[in-house]
Image 1: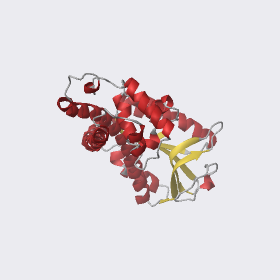
Image 2 (image 1 turned 180 degrees about the vertical axis):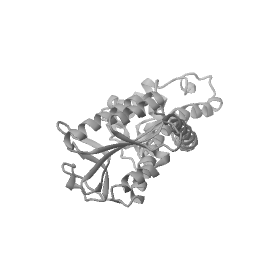
Image 3 (image 1 turned 120 degrees about the vertical axis):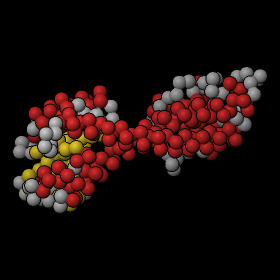
Image 4 (image 1 turned 45 degrees about the vertical axis):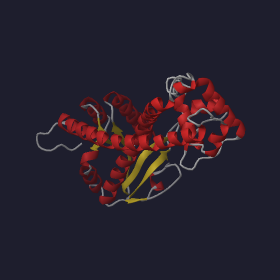
Length: 303
């Protein structure tokens, strides 16, 4: 790991943590607002076509399968896609909640409608349980409450996927700038010659004694050099111990299959200096996402 002047690992750690918080707050709010508005529109669609849930039946689920998401969050307590699917005879409701959803069978839609009726949270739709409650006094609150819970969950999922893609794209760009070319391949890396010199590939399995281990990147910067590189953007400090353990476990597996291999970790976010030192102690090169010029220099030294 490259440090400049009198800089310490702790200095870089604090810098990385601050940047990660800024990235998170900026993007999670964007995702939250987008999901909130999107699901409010879906909630309004259900209300409009079911007389505010009073005439809810299986037909609305088949007409617009995305409403399954609203159902999952109206039951008490909200439940996951797999659990909701399991209760209703399918593996998951993912296919019904996609941008291009499949249509549930009549039997499945009927089971879902019945399940919601039996398990709906009366606090969110009190007008269905008390004739004296005016739906106009409650509908906005119900929509905001339900869609807020959905938006929180969806925004966090979107952020995790987005953050992973951003980090891996940055690492890939750094390698290209170092003069390496990206190659696509689907097979397992079992020999250094499976990858051309001066190239890298991503999301690839590596042959190891026992079970194969996937690597975020496999890099062959020179004829006799191979590097296995793992990328980790850590948003919560307590998770860093698990993530570092994952890297170390992969390192031992990769080197069992490729004793001369180099191993690296591109890291960002909340990783304590003690965990960085643990990686370095295992002969794992550490590259910071916000300082990927060090990765370029490292790779260029071989070419």
